[in-house]
Image (cartoon, rainbow, N blue to C red):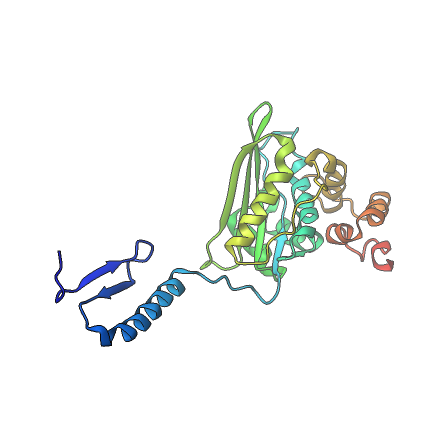
Length: 260
């Protein structure tokens, strides 16, 4: 046990670099010692706390089709349904600035060729061409009859940045919940503004099938392109969700989106 002339070093458990000292000074040294201890404790607390820096503007991001196992005709429509769902959910994510799908899909087609398989390299390529900081893609594959493996990849436009991945085995009706969860984790990862609190406006992936198939025909992702033939769908969507309609369809092709 140390005597009055020996020093004892006290190490804080949460910060091994912060050391406080205790010694047998006389009464005249007590005020100065107290001030020093308070100063060191404040410094330790500041060093142990990480301050999140909020970006000056939302993160520009491009939503891309998802990869589906070759030959899985039952899931093929979901390839285009996923960017639709992400674009819809992003309305509650003020930390994101979505690039229009009709801008990114052209470069996605160009970068993937006939394979229509998006890789990390092709996702970064699209992000660069549409002036986005990140691209989001991923894959859906069957685990069991009633479950799928959802993988969401956030790919940066620069090689020196680190991608972010979310993966989980879920039921099909839980895709919306898990995409929101992936968004929340990603926004925290890049220190962006968090998503708004979740409301009742959840969307099942299956409900987006008709819209996804119209987009597939519009841009020719897995079928021959037949653009400009979705007037009825675009008109209905513009009435219910103009923001989403403008993200998915080119206003130059559908003037109704420009006139509103």
